[in-house]
Image (cartoon, rainbow, N blue to C red; front, side):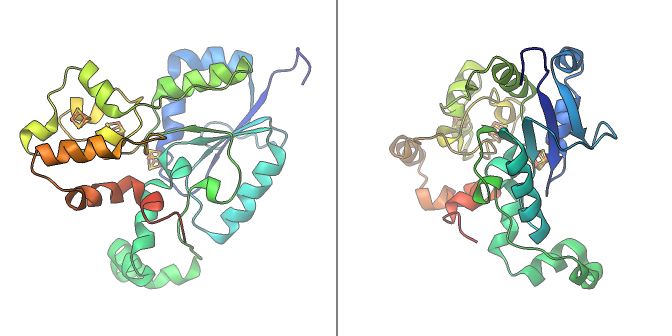
Length: 254
Ligand code: SF4
Ligand code: SF4
Ligand code: SF4
């Protein structure tokens, strides 16, 4: 790329709800600036153009169908930088829940009577994209925080390594002035989950379900001590990790 060329950027979507791409599109105030700095050559949710000559690929969604394995490998061959966009892509996310149950049961639960038509679609156990290809950077969350996306774009344009928070959600939660949900008799996986979301779920009355995945070196002992202090056990809260963390919890195997 010469200094005058703008980097070419593409967005791709695999198995997911496309909510993370919507987060990108909702960066309304900043999109004009981004568009002046990059050429977007592929972004199904936003433009008709579909070019294959991209430098940076943002990839949303898990891999859960045979053809997706081939598709993501082709993207890897073409892109200089691949960024996993959101929980489905970076940790497997909600999609990996289906891996824990017999496929026939999953089809019936989701599609009921109509599940018989599902035989026309091939499906495989869901997995994060780095179970198939090497990934350069990750933007976590379900959905991704807009500001984190903007920070990553800025770093990549400056040729810097994006900085993604690697401390627990509890830090964000304290800074937000929340009362810990353990005080209210609830459980929460914030002590071992990667921050960067301002603990938004706790702030709005819920608990942290770990959508941003584990911090790199989770302090399991501190989490265990917290649980003990509130009369809880590790086994008792392990199920809380099933929602977003089942891929890694069950050993990252399919
Ligand atoms: S991470 Fe969440 S919001 Fe993003 S695509 Fe997956 S399910 Fe949708
Ligand atoms: S355990 Fe949950 S509610 Fe308590 S401080 Fe940590 S993130 Fe907040
Ligand atoms: S509080 Fe937990 S579940 Fe909610 S956005 Fe943050 S990491 Fe995700």
